[in-house]
Length: 182
Image (cartoon, rainbow, N blue to C red; front, side):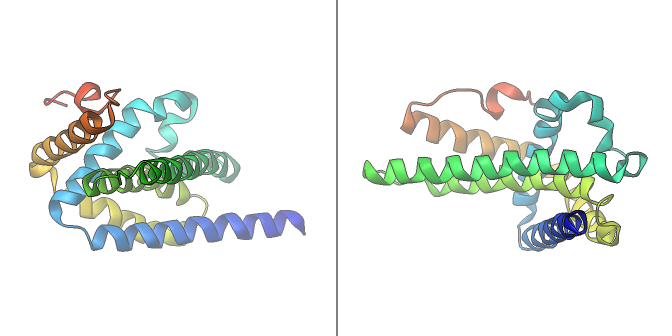
């Protein structure tokens, strides 16, 4: 019975994430969708290569077992949840110092979260196959923005630079992780 309950919980989390992402992308402007697409490409190249043995699970999740996809989904979900917690702490620290985070930075954090969720729901189609239509719709909304991705990357770089200068944190950014040609 415990396994059944665990599977039901995992299915509900995947289904919910898929629906929420689809709605979020629907409500975005084309430039915001292009930013999600750019960040998804960076996440795929930079972060997901760390789980290289399962990297092609993102290309065809149905070539993997249900359990393998759950493991990858949960791993990505943990990263997302840890990032959320770190963002809350950062936001509170800045509020205590009397310096709230810039809206552009908050928006960038949300864009990164949605880019990660795009990969989560892609793997999630093996977990909740009836959501494949919504996942295809998510990717479809991003296909139509390829011509404005350079502008989206410029805007992301400007937001990162502005927040980095303000906070003194000039670490690895899209500026340093992706060239204009990529």
